[in-house]
Length: 228
Image (cartoon, one colour):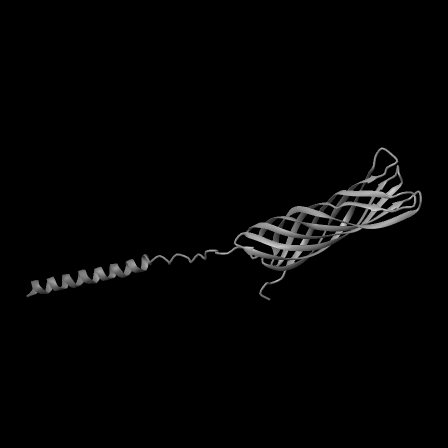
């Protein structure tokens, strides 16, 4: 009888020790935490919708004129610029296309002191298409369109002036990147050829060919929510 009691007691002790070991193992070795949930980014920065902006920079103008009394029938000058602009973008995956219009206030005064000829340009306006490639919140783009500028030519020796509007083409490109919420920073270069116009004077007409206008400007762009 005592032998059977001893066996039962021994078995009970073994079971109790096993249960204690299992409990201790659960305390010492808790199950590992579940892996963190990683949200996969499925869309890039949204460039769609209307926008407005302001920019500042420099402009340079080069023109030829005929007839010329001297050996250097050239007019050239530089100026700072202040630009207001507005546009609209549409985005298809990484491709962004849109339209934009702007007007730049300038004070370009191109002179040729030999012939005493002066050409002043107070503003330059453009209407352009844009196409770019979006690298998330950065857009690299090319642009092309039409432009217009107002020219005032003066023959200082005769104290006579005439005004004409030149029309031409504009091409260029730039880079734009998001700096905060709906606010972007832009750096842009434009080149324009605004063609020939004949200015009328008493001593004789003068034809000016504004064949090279360069605009380099930096600006801030505000994008509106396309969904309101």
